[in-house]
Length: 164
Image (cartoon, rainbow, N blue to C red):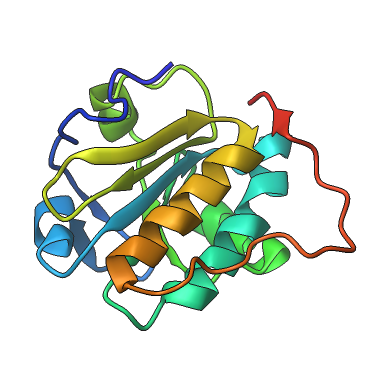
């Protein structure tokens, strides 16, 4: 379980993206909420979960909401993962000693957080959690003053939970 759960303040951090740019949580929160998804490219539950996060991202990307996949692998492997699974949101690299992952007290991936503009965690879960993804969608809808973006299609059979 992560040490940073719903209601807690998310610790600030800065990481380099696969694009070579530096990303700061504190700076991103000035523009709106941030979805942070910690992962490893070899994690099958991460591979299953990230396309659903991409769906939420596609519905919200032009509204000041940041989506970050915080990879525990190098930039090349992270770029390959993003290409293979159709991920277009920002990939950040936390490979050396997992500084940020440890700062957040991670014990498993994926661990996914929605951090509100005030820096407080609004949603926090580990593994694939259908309800958790729906909560993120709902909260983002509230931030955007609109209906929550759909995640799951009616023709899909999606499990409620898969542990990471």
